Length: 352
Ligand SMILES: C[S@@+](CC[C@H](N)C(=O)[O-])C[C@H]1O[C@@H](n2cnc3c(N)ncnc32)[C@H](O)[C@@H]1O
Image (cartoon, rainbow, N blue to C red):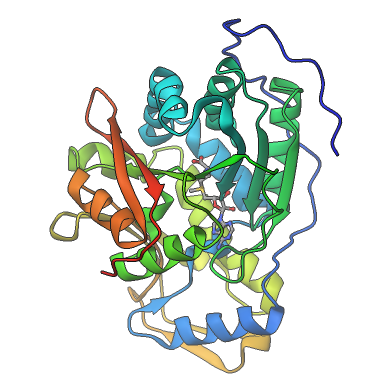
C-alpha cells in the first residue's frame, strides 16, 4: 500500500501549482502496438480527405508544445476550465460523493495542472484521494507526476501509459471507494458523437453504481475567439500541428518534411468545430516508410489532423446519457465558453 504523507489542515488555501522547469526529453512512448499504429496511419492516409489521428500529435515534443499552447493568451479553454474547476470544485466533489471520492482517474491527463482543484476539494471534504493518470505520452505522465508531487505531496499518483482508444487497464479501485473519472480539456470534442459514446461506454465499464464521470466540453461561442485560439500569431499551434509529421516519421521512417506544409485551422461554423489541417505548399511525393507505398499530394491538398467540436449543453448531456451516465449536474463558466457535465453511472445502457 502506498505510504501517504500527512494531510494538510482542511480549508487551508494553496492555489499555486508550481511551475517546473522543462523536464529532460523523455523517450517517445506509445503503447500502440507498432503494427496497429502503422495500419491506422495507412488507413487514415488513404481516406478522402486524408487524415492522421490526433493522438499522434502527442509525442514528447507535442506534449510540451500543447502545454505551451495552454499558456498562450489566445488559448482561453484551459484558463476557462481551470477557473470553473477552482470555483465549483467543492460542489462537484460534494455531488460526486465528497470524502468517499477516493479514486480520481483522469483520461488524457496531460500536465494535469487543473485537476489539483478537484483533488483539493476531495482533501477538504476529508477524503484521501488517489490520482490515476492515463495518457499516451510518457512525457505528459512525467509532468503530471512532477506537478502533482510538488503541489500535493499527500496525493499518491499512479501513472498508466496507455492509448485509451484501445484496451484500457486501470488499477483496481481501493475497496469501498467511489471512482470519479475525469475527461477534461474538451478532448471529447475530438470525436464525432458515435465514437464519443462508444469511448465513454468503455470507460463506464470500469465503473460501478455510485461512481461518477466529469466531462469537460468547449461550448459554442464567438467564432473569432475560437479561431484565434488555434491560430496564435506566435505560431505555437502551427508548430504543434507540424510536429505530428515528425512523430509519424519517427514511428514509420516516412519522409514527411513538416516545412512543406501550412497549418490551416478554420472554425467551421455549420459543423461547430475547429478543423486542423496540414496543407501541402507544393506538389509532393512522400515515401511512407513502414506504412508502405507513397503518397502524392497536389499543392493545396490537406491532411486533417484534428477536429475540435464546440457543444451546447444538451449535446453534452445526451452524449453522457447515451454512454450510461445519468446527468446529475451541469457547471458552466460565467462567460458560457466551457461546461462540465457530472454524470452518475447507470446500470443500463440506453444507446444512441
Ligand atoms: C488536449 S490534451 C488535454 C490535456 C489535459 N486533460 C487538459 O485538459 O489540459 C489531450 C491529452 O490526452 C492525451 N491523449 C490523446 N490521445 C490519447 C489516447 N488515445 N490515449 C491516451 N491519451 C491520449 C494527450 O497526450 C494529451 O495529454
